[in-house]
Length: 456
Ligand SMILES: [Zn+2]
Ligand SMILES: [Zn+2]
Image (tube, rainbow, N blue to C red; front, side, top):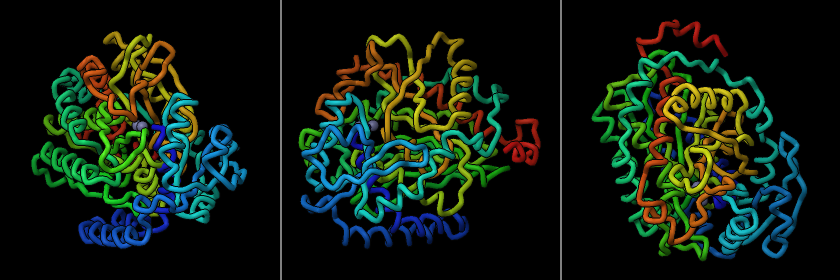
């Protein structure tokens, strides 16, 4: 998560290049393939000019909290005080690409958690990102475009008993067996392509399911993966479930370094994969459009998710709910199974997520708590900044709620989490409840589409 904040900064720079293409792809379903191909070509040509990951002295512009900034005067320069739309004290700083791993290591050590910055290719991009911030709207707006309701137990309840820990375990094992999934490495791209083909295989040729690799100009060769299930009744209302597919080793970074990233965040991708498997196996067809996302380059500043969120914003896409999965598998001595993150997320969605938990998971003996994760700690922050309602349940962790201490190292492995995917299974159940109750089931729910749509 730490590295994610850095990535966000870069994502802003990326957006300037990638957004028009992304917007075009979203608007023109009929020309989707052509638009996607265009977006990829566009982003790839931008890559040749940016190449931030190839030039260790390249200037990188970061947006971070003032608190984070005060811990690293030796690593950044040119601090300019800013505030986002919520009034949070931010700093716009400049550093060199080679310093990003040291910055993330500092955040990891001093704040004992992930995230911390958005990364951009230019100061102008970083300033534009802060000026355009919509976090205040995204946090508090009852916004959220639709009324969240719980009336689809017919679909959700049978799904919950189908979660198989062995499947989640196998996906985490496969993903952590890559040398790394670092955004600039060949493994980073190979793992993204594997996720796309695995997800599409689960859809078994359904004509209402499509996928794409979403390139971003600061994401190097690693694309984000997006699988879309087109809604049958309200296709313009979009539900997003996502997690980041990249990993990192902050002891030096680099394209060859071992970074298994089992908890951070193979566990999130594996949770998403099991959710998709169960929904597809049941033959489920949603009323609203659903997008499963594996975000690129989160560990270097939320770059993939920021590019995607801003592309949706540029296309005026009506994203009605976003759920983030980042680290779902570690629970040591925590008193609770999962913790709802309460900062940089939407208040009505937080209430809804707690109610979902109490309706579907609490009766199974599971417990929940609360947490905060600070500025730009994971991909939900990209959606929040773009003005969309986002929520995030985090793993139970240690006794004091701390995250898995071995992330961002060679030791982030299943073996160091009891060789079990039990905890991720709980998140798969939560995600299935979220999926069924936000996207609803075509032909099943009693509310006419028009009435549901007017609940915004
Ligand atoms: Zn991380
Ligand atoms: Zn993470």
